[in-house]
Image (cartoon, rainbow, N blue to C red):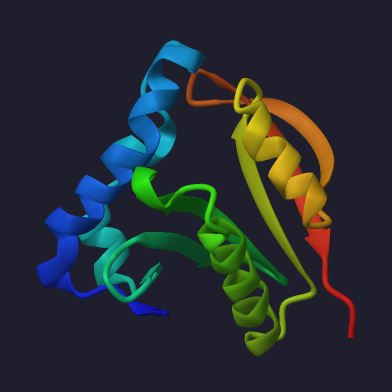
Length: 144
């Protein structure tokens, strides 16, 4: 894993588009990660990519918590454990930064994502509207 570079913006945007496009029909609109400003996120050092740009994770440090804002895996690599590896990397980054927990949110209709997060120890902490979408809020406490 490494931070994305400015020259990779188009590839990052393509990866996000390809990963999230199937969800448009499920949730009835474009998922929020498809609306993000990746030039700004990359410039801020928040986009972490795999070698080969098969997957990425956007990590935003907050007060004592690391927000996993986006996890995206190329469709032809989904189901191979890359999403789990990206989330494990997020945990490593949180520990490296001295964070006590990670948090994320996902659309209530993304049931397979919710199940994945629960299997990795995330617990639902609430539900709320986020930019016209219904989101499940989740959190994972990190042990010592």
